[in-house]
Length: 309
Picture: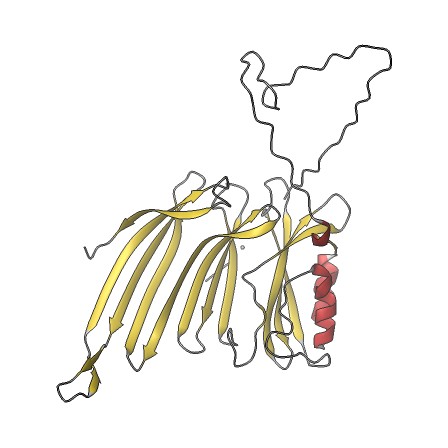
């Protein structure tokens, strides 16, 4: 598990007032801007309206200052106060309350990557550490700069769970890593997030997230479990890699599952476990389908092979 980019097009409104007493001749529409394409008479669809940041996602923040402030806090209430203006989904009171004077130690990681657009670099924040009686804390967001100085449009990172309850799920045994990849565009990056929780059995998730319509949207997900129980054991191996030189690239999933032991009924009626092991594997290719009438863009299966067949 390892890990390492923005341009907001604001609508330009131009008021045209007719001159009193003079006949006005409407200008011919330019090709590709709506109306009829010049010289062909063919109707051309207007370009899509530029995305505008919703007011509830606009925040004013100085990332370097916030990093220094979070590094100096010692109480959970201070962490909450500093992060609340970012409108992050912190899950602060998930299952159990958090006392304001509970000790806290949080580090803010600051990254830069083209996430929202190819023309502007975004700021990516991740707050991690301990809060609320030594509970693990992961939270963060993508900050897309707007025209005003130090003003950003913030997008929550849904794969970061906020506060992890001690003894709950996810737990302190949870590992979360994310990285940036050029997967759907040669400049804009998507976020690859890996999640592992081994508090009971091992549950793992691998997801990809792309900026669409002012939010990070999940465009790929795979989940699997490994571990032993009274009924036997399961060992699952999964790898996902991007392939191809053209964008969007394809994803290739290699997967294998080995199960050992199964429960059988003996002639006496007693239950017992066998020691036999069975293994199966396959490879799956996923292709990206862009956003359209079918919904947001995402990766769908477009090929499969099984060496066991």
